[in-house]
Length: 365
Image (cartoon, rainbow, N blue to C red):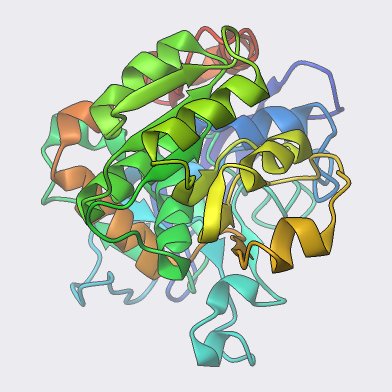
């Protein structure tokens, strides 16, 4: 069958719509009709050439929801149901081998054979359309697929963030989950930061302080648990540190979650944590610079627990969906714009200008 997809042919150049022939699904493969694709900040970094993983040319898009169009042989969903044409589905963005050292010890996100739709495979790799900026996507037989008929049809688009920012945030809480009444700081108020705030609120954290450059996003963060907000435009690092110390009887936050992906943000964040507290860096999808630090003064003497969070896997996506189902209206607010697939370049421009928090592309429009 024929389909169409937006292709990144060169870094820094506009995407271009192209036609492709897709083969019928092989055993265990699932052909999906993409109903919505999320435009992630990582897509912008890839389009600019900032992510060293990016092959060219490539169909971008690792966030997607859709409907089953055809199934090769038998394939079952995460809850054990046979997949059939017409079912609404969400799939894990990452595909792993299931056999290696990491897969067999519950760390599948570190699988050396892991690939992600819209990130690792260019159009030279069959079936050539390997990302969600497309009208159809042929899912590898190893893909974990969730039927989402338990979510109202009007909110299925909302779930495009579940397998990326939602799942990454859930992974962060695998490492450190605040207790009720603990003070949390979230650096960054984009989709990842909002998920982190929502998970912190679910744990009973209080206060929850968001720091961001975007005042509009800080307002949105109040729907995801923010009890206090700090604008980078109107405060400097010393003022933000003093505010958080004053709020916590001089100690600092029990946990700080980073959701920006810049070394300077980490440098500041380490100074916002109390002695014995936790610092969780989840915002780096690509290199974000380097920083100077003193292991004695920054890590050992304050007895900090510092952890990096790399991507996610299926259980994290499931946890994100469960969180979203508790407040679908709020999570729907993350998607500030919906555009046809043909306007993918306009979607990128909206996000680069900071005018959109999340754009969903509609390949069927």
